[in-house]
Length: 132
Ligand code: HEM
Figure 1 (cartoon, rainbow, N blue to C red):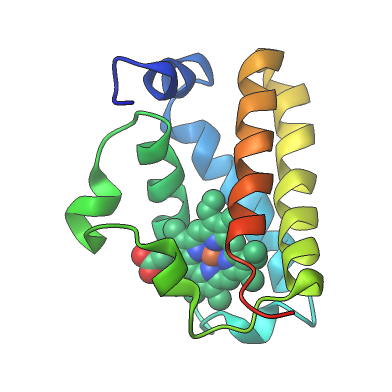
Figure 2 (cartoon, rainbow, N blue to C red):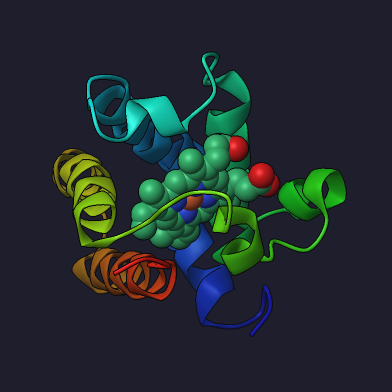
């Protein structure tokens, strides 16, 4: 579904790009202090922040900045170089949902949109597990 559909309405309903920038900022603050995840990421997290915030904004109906720069997301392929088992998935989600929940509370994000984003993040994190 494109910008006219559910995703487009989510992007608008959460207030656009600043929501995703704040979400990703909080997420990487958690990653930066995580002994399991930190070594998987580049030393400079600036590009990682921009890519993830751009990807999420695009997915939910925002501008296609991510794909203009990076091409098709191909998330399974892009995560193939990293060993992602249950512990990595759990840590990733802990930081992401740990950023999402207070953000949603602080911004008064509509609960339906928040629930949709939360469910999506859990689904994709499950989908990206590539090691047991
Ligand atoms: C399940 C646990 C996950 C781990 C351990 C993980 C780890 C990583 C790592 C190490 C990178 C490369 C560093 C970088 O370029 O930023 C990366 C990139 C990325 N991840 Fe994940 N990730 C996980 C889940 C997810 C999920 C659930 C999503 C989306 C909902 C996601 C979206 C992305 C995106 C968009 C990129 C950048 C791709 C690009 O290079 O253009 N990741 N991830």
